[in-house]
Amino acid sequence: MQDFWDNRYRQEAFAYGETPNLFLKAALEDLAPGNILFPAEGEGRNAVYAAQKGWNVAAFDQSAEGKKKAQLLAQRLGVAIDYLVNSFQDLPYTEGQFEAIGLIYAHFPAERKSEFHQQLATYLKPGGIVIFEAFSKKHLEYVTRDERVGGPRDIHMLFSAEEIQHDFQPFEILLLEEKVIELQEGLHHNGTGSVLRFIGRKLKT
Image 1 (cartoon, rainbow, N blue to C red):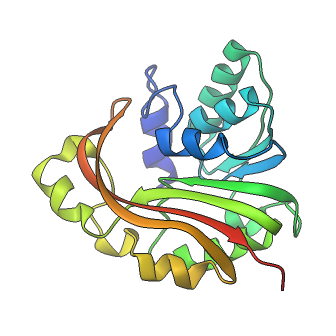
Image 2 (tube, rainbow, N blue to C red):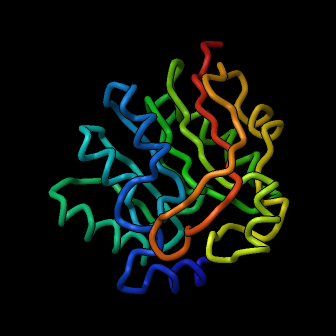
């Protein structure tokens, strides 16, 4: 998969555009800036936007080409982000380090996605917020009809509300919905798709 993403991000154009995901953008409007983490951040559009809004941004991805594009975008817009090329096994983050985590179309291998979500949740401090948007299991029918909308074709890499509730415990659910939306994000998210959206607040244990 690293080769796939390096090849996609090596192109001059930004694969998913240079502007932030609209759901993330709206969610950040309700939060005071602090430390935020963007896993699987690709070319950096969301991380750079958060930095523009005053957040202290950390991000990581397996693609070195993605990091190059993210750094170019950050430099062009006059902000700084701390971007690592790393796997989940080697992350340097500590328990309770972040006030927010932005998981935007972060589709992990089916057998590891719950483990990765639970690992990420430990980096969030009590009261911290997860902002999540990704393709739902119903999306398979949409991408099969129109591949321009993008997204995995393996149903096990797609998400259900039950999976998210399981992975993020104990969290207060502020929003959890499955919704059909129109995507216009760069070269590879264009058309009608089915997404799962989640905003959760980590509870004190």
